[in-house]
Length: 417
Image (cartoon, rainbow, N blue to C red):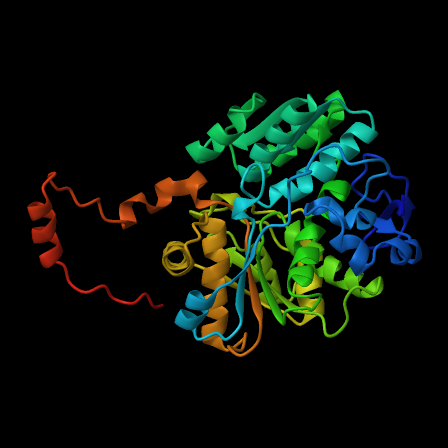
């Protein structure tokens, strides 16, 4: 059943047809999908959802396509991990990791947004799909384009991590490295899309692409037994994910799937690229662009496209935001791995490090439920940890040599903050 009704400006509420549009021609505000919620309530019940496949399309009525999904049938429904050892280390009683570092097929939350954009691209008649990317999006666009037989262009900054370049190139797209920042890449892609009539997942299809991020929020609530957590801490790059998590929470209440107090949503950014945190602190309504300088390259976007919605969502939820230094980010990557066995990229380290800082500041109480959003896999960026970890112990093949080594070891110490 199609309940997707069209596009609407997030600021002035002007309505638009469901085409490849992303900016309001009246006020230049961003366009968002909207739905016939009365129709959603009739078909999208807890019982109906429970009977559906465990992928992002289980929330089909609240996703902006008009026909059948075309890809993403194994994407989404990632683990919500009860992080007991990490919680103990931080003094938190109820801590969860929403772990999209194991999302299929490219190990990041982008495997939620790209299936929606790619499906909509086919519905609108496109045969070429591209993106401006700091790595994870390029990997996902390349993979889903390969599955669909679409011509694909991935535009990236030239200084991207080798693992992320490889993760896109292996699927056979045209990978184009640009001498500049992500913001330079994004500007070029806007021009290319206009000139050649190509679909760009995070530009002219952004209104559809962004809606896929809501499934992250839908899953958190469903996996908690259809209840809201008290706090969610989310990384901010271009600003796609955080406001859509907020929208997911509101839509679940709107259609009667969840009730109660909505969560407070907190923004996490690296100290070397924190335009949203700057705006939260100054009271600005829009982030001022900054020049990124951080180890967390996947969130190094100095001019976030959805910065306005991020600020609106954080403030509207009663949330907050904070920065983490590169050292704090890497410390958090290591802490998460040593307590919960989850290896995240620096974006995830940023989210955990900011959570720690907010706990220390008393902004988030330790006795309230907290979900930390982990959005990408550490194996793509393993080089950032290489110099922080010890070399393997090298021994010969005899048991005697191992026993001599073992006898010289000190008792293991417990991991703590």
